[in-house]
Image 1 (spheres, rainbow, N blue to C red):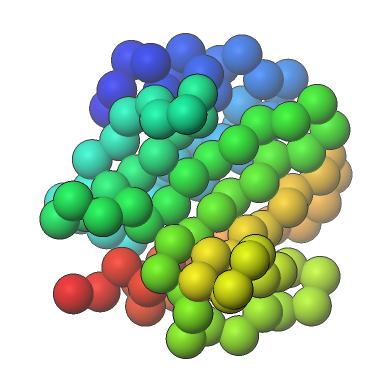
Image 2 (cartoon, one colour; image 1 turned 120 degrees about the vertical axis):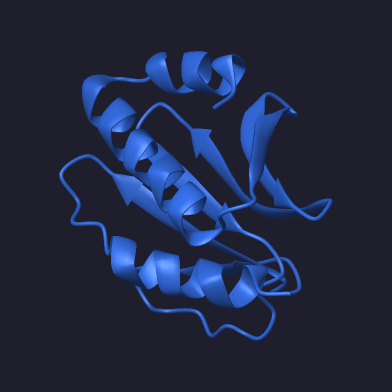
Length: 113
């Protein structure tokens, strides 16, 4: 685990730290050979030289971005498309139930070689 990523996560509010730690663990469990580092000031996760996910902490939410997701349908209220749809994001607010299983399933599909 990258110390810069840990420092980024630990700067959030308590609920954000908890959710980010779970998302980080989810990525490492789902993509076993994943590497992590700060890019563009945010934690990015890569496998075989390509991005698979990123975490962004904002003042009142967390965005969990999944790359290479063009073949994955958006899920209303859970997962929305960005740009041309190759990226999907889950925006998570304080107190919101997070479907980590769904996010892991999507990540598994999009990161498969």
